[in-house]
Image (cartoon, rainbow, N blue to C red; front, side, top):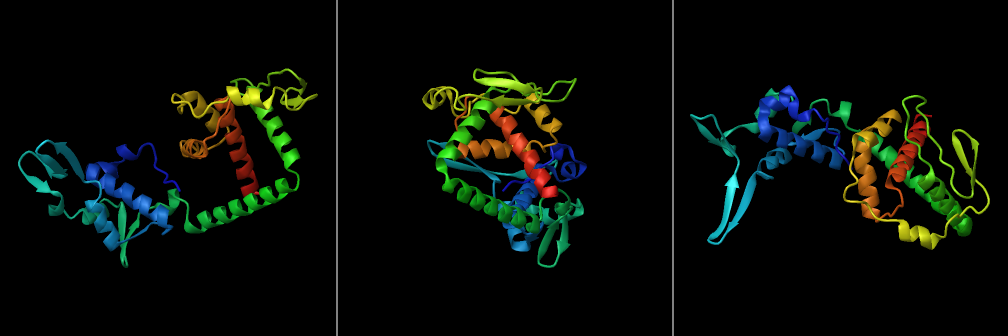
Length: 267
């Protein structure tokens, strides 16, 4: 699960009103509601527990461990964290709303997925997984060859968007023929280079493979939400231990799948 956080979050007037401590409470509230599918509701006891999380810093010294706690001062007066009614401040700033049994994050449903949407997506994903496994279990050899052929085309086709035509720029490779300006068709041996050779050239997620402006532009041009989708892409492949010859090609393939999925979902 992921929480959607606008890149202007830190500059929002409401966050300026509640400061760093209020911003930390808001992040915790969003994470709680998203993780537990509460549609923005935070029970009173949970909201109060936020005040004890992440508000201390430990410093290890030879004579022992020092515990530093958050507080506020304005040059004339200092206040410890418990001295301030932070829940009331969050309500006064219209970040939270008082409801029966706790608080409701203001405008939560406008920016975060609802419980119904998450459950529907999970169900659809589970069905797609079952269908995929059943289909490929019938003929694993064809599945392996198809996957190898798809990787061959993906890794060699350069489809950066140009300002002129906003379309892919196909690049011919050995064993292929360009029959259409927007489609590269592999002929002859579909496997191309040997699988062992490709395995030698592939590598895990590079340390310097970051979300650059160019990679962001490709996603925006495709209509894919950023940086939400980049984080999903990164976590998926790092957790899976994926290896690719061309990670930019893997990113573009991921975007195409996102567009296809969104089209099916809207249809």
